[in-house]
Length: 304
Image (cartoon, rainbow, N blue to C red; front, side):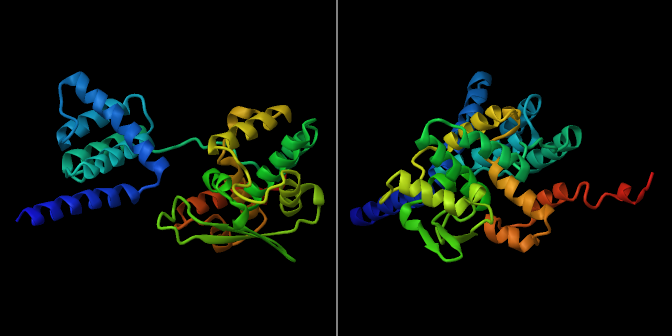
């Protein structure tokens, strides 16, 4: 009997470990940060945050809706649910008191999100020119490769900084980069991105990557040894030097810039998704819609 109890406890610990392993570390940290805000709300109002109940959660969402975006509400709800699961508690997030409240908030607030500006081809050229003028050769070569590879591969910034030298294979057509794990590939099946040579060596991601590997004498480990937050800081730094408004750009601007630019040039939806790794068409179609805003504009038919 004691052996059975020990086995059950061991299984419970292993199950909890599996649950935690099912989420990327960054994702788990974000869930915990969201839950801390909920726990603070509960503490201030004399509620129990763990375990909680639908009525308390919906009061929190109403409170949050006064200052936060609708997308934040949805993320916080997901975080509260996940943290409950990790602690062995069930929370019915589909309870009518929650779903009806969210529907009401959605109708009042709307769901519009103002996204950061994509780095389009002309923006990219201006930013690369600013990098080329950097007097520090190491920074110049490294950051040029970072931005050109990030743009050409439609990389998430977390994927970009995770590229290992062993993930890179130069071929006659360009370079193959293996992405071991991404936001939409938590099981780690991986995918390979193929980036061809560009006609202009000045803006060629393949040439720039070769130059950085040679300059940085990289024979093992990460190619871009930095945090994903540094990607955004580097983009903002050179955008400002180039005379652009740095506040309008983020680490995601490279990825959205790739998708919007290729859509504008007529690339098919499935071709864009094959590079970015998007699992659904929803976000890609937003990029295509943005790219076609003036291209397929009804006002183009008016000749005055």
